[in-house]
Image (cartoon, rainbow, N blue to C red; front, top):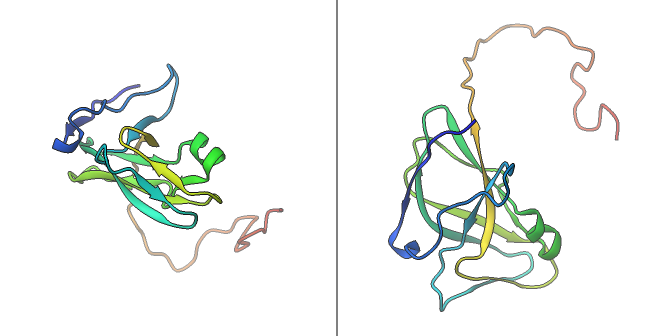
Length: 150
C-alpha cells in the first residue's frame, strides 16, 4: 500500500536527496541532517540537539509520520531520537526537525547529509470518548507495571 506525501525541500536543503527507502520492503525512510556543510554538530554524551532536515511535508488526513531512531546509530554510537516515536501531525507544515540525544559514552558528530532518523507513515484512528460510571472487567483488571510478568 502506498500514499502520496507532498514534500517541500527548503532552501538550506536544495542539494540534499529527498527521503528514500533503503530496501524494497523497508517500513521506514530516512531523514538526513540539513546542517551547514562547514558546521557539523557535535552532540556530547548526555546532550540533546534539534537537527533540521530541510523538509516540510503535507500528510493526508488520517495519517501521521512517526520519527524513529536508526538502529545502527543507536547500537554503534548511542545516538537515538529522544521523543521516539516523534509524531508529525497531518496539519503540521513546518520544517521537520529531529530531536537527537547521545546516550553513548563518546561525542557524536552529525554532519550535513548524514542519515539521522527513520520515518514510518501510519494511519491514525480518531477516538470518540464516552464517559461511563463503570468499565467492563478483564482478567488483568487494574494490574499495571510488571503485573503480567517480568
